[in-house]
Length: 530
Image 1 (cartoon, rainbow, N blue to C red):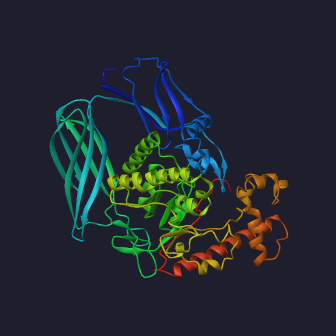
Image 2: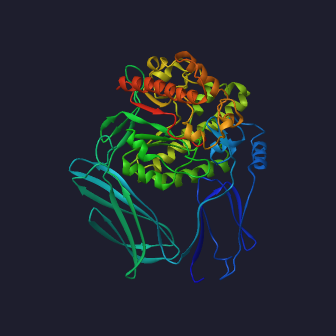
Image 3: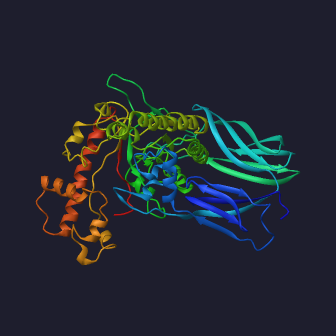
């Protein structure tokens, strides 16, 4: 026990948890999107410690939070009061599983000496001949002592003598890289990454070491007025790039795998990590860096209005800073987006009209605090010069400006039963969501059905259809262009042909209309409940 600190770490506690050590409450968690740490030195025994975690059901807590919010039930339901994956409460593509438990690692750190808590590279300027960078270190220490801190980047070793004080210390190095090699998406060039290594030495002894990869590149969202409306496109290393890709939801309901190699094989160069799911694990972004796939990263808010009381804002700020700092070195990060479809919903789904003017003002004021103040300010401070976009889409399909300005989610095809030909008429500046359902292939259906279940209206098949009108919509579109299939297997196959023809029409229209339209992101790449 001869250490100054014993730090107990939890990667993820989902979501409300009380942590006890040897009968004493040491931690109360209420956010599955952040890590939780606590120094247990004063309570831990040399041996025979008991660690107990009690997970609390969210439902009673929901009721308490609604009462504290003047009894207002927010659009989106009770899930809006939690910092928990919103898809756990069910969506039109997946089941409701309101989970609780430990995710990720639980580990103990014994600390005597200063530690390097954060290492990141900020790109100051770049030309063909020279890249100017600043390398920043955050060092935490429980002692005050002289140290030597060094970094190694592109075979350049730079050392500084540094007095490490008790608390948090900040240090930066100016670095120049001659003839820098740029990071590109896989369709435009190579995915060159550099490595930065940091060492902390006390009295000739290596105390701590940290390394990270990074890419040299500029990525900007260009959103400016023009003669038609307002452009929306991404500029990579000064080159306007047409984005071809898809939206990405959690790969499975309980555990994530990835389909990133397949996305590259399909010539996708961007994936949108959707705001109703999860911030993906480090490996996801590492692979995107390696494969040359850009990531449009939503913050985790979707289709709900969220409270902005003091407790919630503090939680949001800690969560956001942690995620921004974790991901800011990745060259694949192209955009931070505040939320999914909330601006559209407030203005065009009847939400605003369902409240008194007083309550509507309060609810929208909270929206402005979170998405127009807190998040953009944090992205500007911690986001390593990546752009922020308030809400996707900027306007809903109920607003005619959605075709001429910003990004668009077009669901006239599918939800509104408009014909596929409308894709050719309603081409936006950037299509960040559109899609059409089909049934999965028969070998997938065989994994969750018995032979007698293989009919459209069987209990098993209906349990896998989470859209309330899904089967009816597929059937209606099918009957417009095809004869009635003779059996279930034929129906499944024709639904796939129908989907392929419809999506081809949409993607062709988007690509044919560039540079007016500069992106097409299909909904959705993957499925957790086929």
